[in-house]
Amino acid sequence: MPSYTIVAGLPSATGYTTRRLLRALAISRLWAVYQRWDGVHDQIYASYSDDEGLTWTEEQVTTGTRDWSSPTAAVDSLGNLHIVFGNSDFAPRNLWYRVRTVAGWGGWEAVTTLIAPRQQFQPSIAIDSEDNIHLTWFGTGWGTFLTKQQVLYRKRVPAGWLPIELVTDNSRQQYKPEVVVDEAGIIHILWVGLGWGTFILRQQVLYRQRTAVGWQAVELVTDINSHQDAESTITVDAADDVHIAWTGTGWGINVLVDNVQYRKRTAGAWQAQEALTDMGSKQGVPVIAIDTLNTITVVWEGLGWDFPARSQIRVRRKVDGAAWQAHITITDDNHFHRHVAAFPAILCPGTGYAFLYHNDTDLGVAGDYQFFTLGVTWLPSVTTDLDTGVLDNAATLNGTLDADGVEACECGFEYGETIAYGNITPTDSKRTGETFSQLIAGLLPGTLYHFRAFATNSAGTGYGADRSFTTTRATTPVFSRAHALSREEL
Image (tube, rainbow, N blue to C red):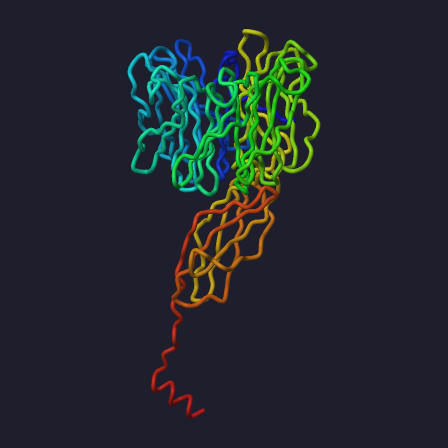
């Protein structure tokens, strides 16, 4: 079970504030975003890996004489890394945004600009199929009840940030929302809050979605006379069904202890709740993901295992519609482990799973920020290189396999007269760093053709950028009259 160190010697509290810090690109790069102490203040950092997590390069996102915390991150279709974070030193606590492109880090943008004593917490970010940013968080200073924490939402389009919207306007406190966007563009937000359902003095798990016509009614995921912890997690599958996990009391045999629960929403209705643990010791900070094979993975930390006084990392998995598999042990030693983030749903590999966690060497002593992977096959990354040898009816297409996703890939090209392509070349088996070429013939003279490289492994198919070329015009032989006469005399 490979585990690689991103940063060594981090304080035990590092990165414990936000889930889903790991982000990957459909190209080969992985990102891990976190906060850590620079010797004077808490700063935000981003590390990337171009070799499936084996080695990492760190970049500093924030500087200065303030403390920064709660980073959340997502990657768009162009590979740009988007980060939202807040200050944690004094009120007012506001949120800021930065983007990292191939050109480097962009400037700071204020997401909120409230004055003291208002405070904003725990942002969660998602990106839709058009690369718009969707952000949720909780904070004071909004709506009817200015001193109560509400759930907020804001969208960023290419022209900038749109107005802030209230997801809740409740007379009681709301906590720690998380957002995902499905393929239809529907926004799904999950959080925990007071003031809902039958038991308004108990924290319940809440859900709300925003469709093209606006916000729909708040839905009670739980309505139980027992406390639900303020750590919930959400994902959507390829059919746009919602899957959630959370920890709370009132379930199973150990009703007074926080245990991990799961529930699915399909066809607009919530299915029965399922218990993933029923331990006599607290379980917490679950994160859920679903991969391309429709396998659900839930990762969490918990006490009461082989070293009962030490928080360990555990995993449970199931294929959607089947029974949950047995617990999988990730850590099993006399150290404190802090779970940080699981691999995000939309970018799960074809098989296996990966996540981040903080591995304390001992209580109160700095540990390592770890990247864990088991049985993962990543989506391959490929570059469409320049064409060569263009003739009136043929050309040679070239490509490079940048990352094979840890297994050999079948590499080839799509080509045609439009970006719909319509033709596929034979393929060659290649590994990371290898080039490949295909001669295509039977082309029309003087015609524009588009092409792109592709690479396929068990996780799926990665595509290179579109390129184009124009075949040369056919030449017509020109004969002189003398030559023609000479031919007649033969």
